[in-house]
Length: 141
Image (tube, rainbow, N blue to C red; front, side, top):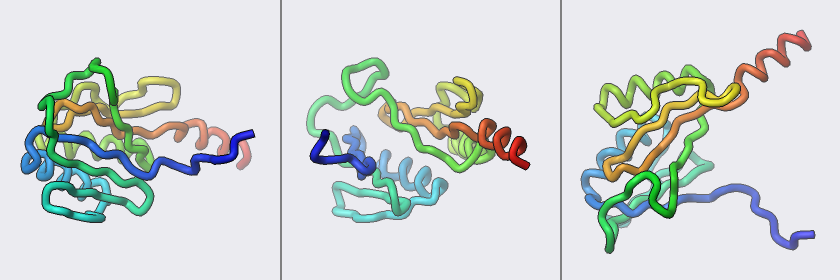
């Protein structure tokens, strides 16, 4: 029996190669996603939506990320519904963000769009279970 239990993921901290460029990218993305700045220390900044926190800071060593490297593969933002995934894709297209996998159903009832931050870190906006929930609601109704 465990003596400690995880109740959620509090935050993630990402190192970036060009702080100003990444700050501009994430500021636009997080404004669109409903996040606000939680703290800004000049060379490190964090955003929050009240539940999730996401931080960036300048990298000290290696200055690039390649999908497939050891380490973080991608970070997924759970969205409210499939319409939000489509809206995110439209926003990304408007901002000329690299979309690696467009909005689509990737697994049963798993709808997502995958895109890259300025350093090539793969990010995702996704909604899981929406169609299943609608079917269950329809059966009960």
